[in-house]
Image 1 (cartoon, helix red, strand yellow):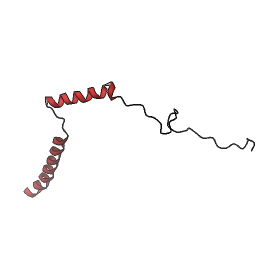
Image 2 (cartoon, rainbow, N blue to C red):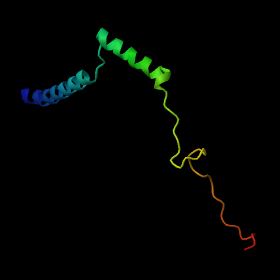
Image 3 (cartoon, rainbow, N blue to C red):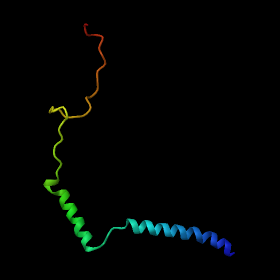
Image 4 (cartoon, rainbow, N blue to C red):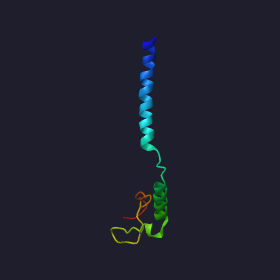
Length: 80
């Protein structure tokens, strides 16, 4: 009877230990300083200085980068 109970308790203990480790590593910090740091990061992200600068094309053209669009197949109606 005890050996059957041991087969059940050993995996439960291992899973409980692993879940505790994962929970401790991924929990949110709750100190006052971490709250202030989090608020400062959000304010920095919202500030106008944090806005990304406009990207320039490497060719120097003002045309936006991206796909050229659908290509038309060569027409046999055109004179050569």
